[in-house]
Image (cartoon, rainbow, N blue to C red):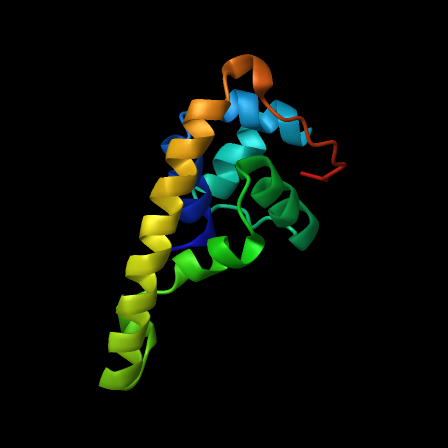
Length: 116
């Protein structure tokens, strides 16, 4: 999994369109598409803005990049899978709360100057 996959997945889970998210981030929808398709990588500043827009910590986006095969020992793999299970439950709860509180009119706008 790549950072673009993680961003796209989180955006889709929240039922946010690319155009809406790109406008809120002050980037083009083409640039967001390139990020989500792993053609371009977001800067640290843009990644933070994306996390803020999606209402998740940057560390959670990074955590989602990890996969079981990322760990060398069986003990580490087991620990990761346990933590991942908890994180997945937390994300589902956050998404449920977020969808109950947010409507399209409540969308966030993040002002960011990002070169494409």
